[in-house]
Length: 303
Image (cartoon, rainbow, N blue to C red; front, side, top):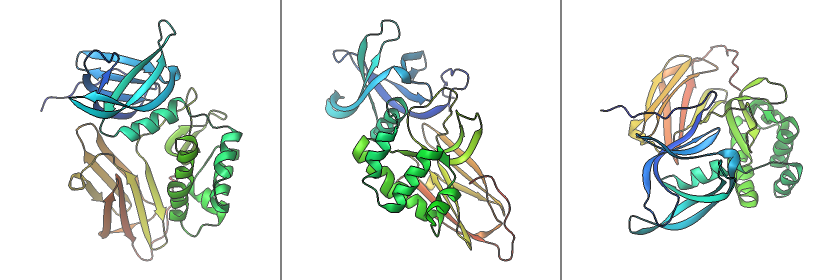
């Protein structure tokens, strides 16, 4: 198989999303096909000959869903309004891909969403007590591990916190401001302290200079007698997911046409490599691992 040529990236630039798709800048001209890339700095379409469209995230002024003709059919597309780098004039392009809503939310969250106290107030007003406490804690502190959030509301398990974020807080924010308000980051720089923060929840919004985002979400939940590992795998077939078990490490691998996943996850305790269950639904993989009896917990920085 011929190796796919990769686009050139600038220093400290990271790929957030990558997918086969198309772009058109003039509705009288035809669609140009290639690979769409969203990085922590820009949005662009790449073909083997090179980059044929790009705009910095800071130049994007609006993101909407519009119907356009694509291969003789009306299809939903993402309309990007942006300021041209050369002239400063506002232009529009339309992009299309399979995971349209994932791209819309991510572009909006990175390029346009700005969280201030008024925004937090609007979302918090629609939440119940514990969910409101979680949101306000993150607004005041900026970021927090799942252990911290569980302590804030005295949650019995980490899964209780995840359910509040995924089923209550973020859906409420999407209804009010059009985008999730909380985001998990495996590694991100605190712009106020310069400290690298690992495996924490943050308020979403436009990135400041120096911040970095990781695109694969992984949660490790220590539930007493077992460990749950939850990982986001976009566009993967369940039969393509490979698990490799070690007593204190789990390796998850999967390949799609657009992305290769490979995560080596250190576990907070030794597990029985012969006893586990896995479930894959709606792009989320859940693996449950039974702990070895009478084994002591290890200290880990992954929370």
